[in-house]
Amino acid sequence: MREDDSSRPPRRSLISPTRRKVVGSVGAGLASGLLFGRAEAAPAAGPLAVPAWTTQPGEPTDWHPYGVPSEFEKDVVRRFSQPPRMPGSAWTLTPLADLFGTITPSGLIYERHHAGIPQIAPEQHRLVIHGRVRRSLELTMDDLVRYPSVTRTHFLECSGNTASEWKGASGLPVQMTHGLLSCAEWTGVTLATLLDEVGVQEGKWLLAEGADAAAMTRSLPVDRILENAIVVYAQNGERLRPENGYPLRLLVPGFDR
Image (cartoon, rainbow, N blue to C red; front, side, top):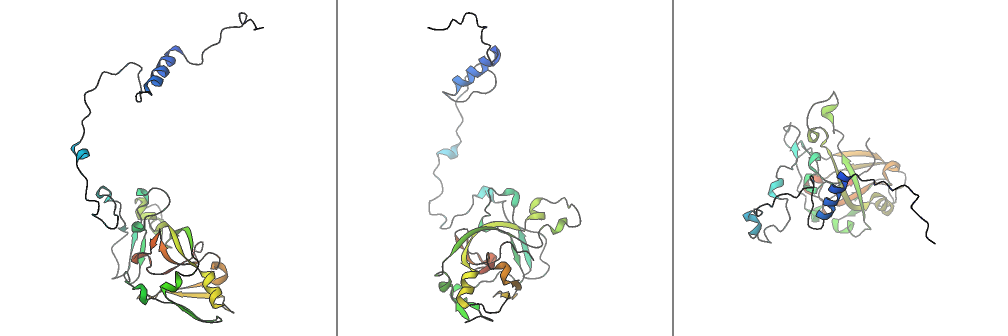
């Protein structure tokens, strides 16, 4: 038996008559497009003007063997923080405000140079590990890529990042204040793998030395860097670029001093 509803008060609508009219119009509009604003039908519009470029063939498909950004993105570039103080010494800044997502494109990763950008032929390059080890090791680039590799995403920041703000707000845009910061996907061989190969005996410190004209060196405590350090030969799916350490660099994530 159905319960008699005659004694119940009438249900109140949660949508006012005015809102019902608007909601109903928008709901109907979804079937043939989107209708926003007033519920009244808009007057019929004229034909849509179609730009001529939409019907013209594009550039030849083989115009760039290596892809480059659109010409309309030509302002998204690295910039010098200031004119170089001496030949070969310079740094350029990542345009942080113009990027999307986490990964910095390889062509926009910040640079810091002490003796220009070295042009090192990979077949002539060698990684030498020696000192207080069971046996010294000299590796070519071909040797290195045969070792088990890892790919990890890490931020890289120059120790001079934000220097323009150390004495107070500079009023400069973010590229000029924080642009010595980038993030990339790095691929290479873990330092632990290579040190296991040579057999570290008593050494507690590692001296890393570059092969460029600046002969940059850094002393690092082995126990603090061993877990994360990578000898890197690729970045964002391609070989390192010359301005970022080609053909080989040491990356030590999580270590800033």
